[in-house]
Image (tube, rainbow, N blue to C red; front, side, top):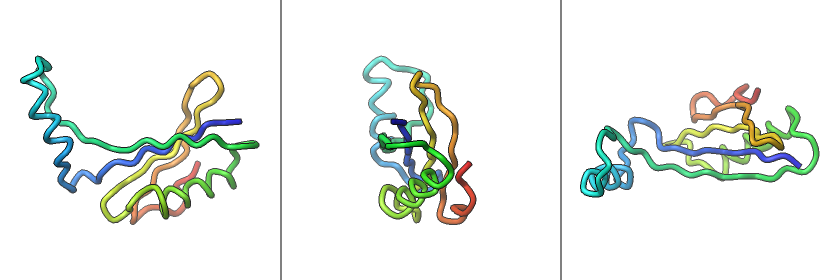
Length: 102
């Protein structure tokens, strides 16, 4: 069984009120030197069988249609092996979703 991680983040041009609230709170909590905070979502998918090109294409489609709102969010897909090492498996945006699975 392999783990595939999908990270979803707001596109850079989209305002992030939650990230801004965290950024404003950091100095009051003694954390200096943080110039920007963006919040996002992480999905960990346990995949039965090999994570081949077809499996990654299905996960990419799942991320694009269900996990991310591609109008305002970008996403990345990566595979974690048994040792926790990661390998990128593609990124997704509304404009560049085709062929993004490696």
